[in-house]
Length: 386
Image (tube, rainbow, N blue to C red; front, top):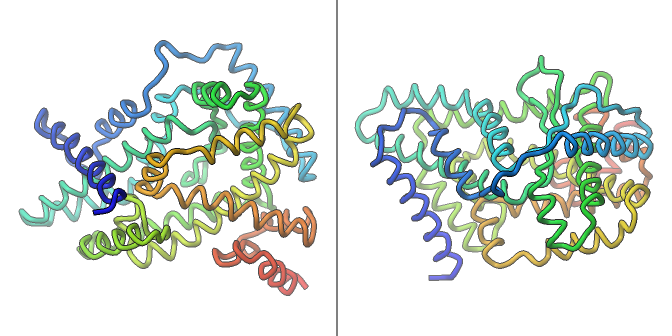
């Protein structure tokens, strides 16, 4: 048995033990996710510096950094931008976990309803399977948020599925930013601006267009994905074959199907996921491009910061890489690299103004295949726009 398989089975067994202990201790309310257990698991894995709390002074400091980052992104892209109703929040790890648990709960609400209906109409074996699904999903969410809670630096949080909401949140996880600055030996203020520029670019992406369209488009992709999940749940499609397929892909280093979060994917969901991945690839690649271009103008000794942050990423240990694969996060890291290469090539070929056109409408977004072939995307767009 390979080392990779040993690590995976140890991780799965540990998660099963945690879930089993929780069941033995108390009666668990029914539902797709035990949110209390997910929260406790995530907080325990993430940890938190004792007594950490964002001061008013620090929050104000970040407000100033965000305004400066918006101004830099506005100047570079040529689009007028103001912070407006966006809320700047300086969070601890537990705060970040709580905010994203709310996001998960909203996101999974339609699936939870279908799960409840399916479970109610199932027999004894169905109820056993439903318990397994419940704790698998709960463990996935707890492990994912706990792991990311120690690593995430910033987040642009927009209520994708709430068409009426007019706010967005710009989050900074200060304990992680401070820890990374210290370990990488970079200036703390420079790193804060580095993160802010990335999140400000996401704000730009969601504001482009007349009217802005990206939130509605993203919501549609997610709703299609969930609709297919509900269909699979209601039809009783088994998990066994998908588990075997995921394991085959994991063992052969095929990143397209690895990760615990991939277990429940049907063919229809995989198609929806491909469109989501294409969008995320160009979003993240564009944000990194703008972050680097603007960073050189507003961050002193930017090259030092970039070099040390890159070295930090490359220094991830073997255990971290295995956990990334287990969670399906390697694909996210690959998206950054592919997306950056795509954007850089388009800017080289046709300039920034042409690249900016990708945010004018869904028809101009690259397919997943085109994110790896910038010339093909340029040719298609030029043909379509005449």
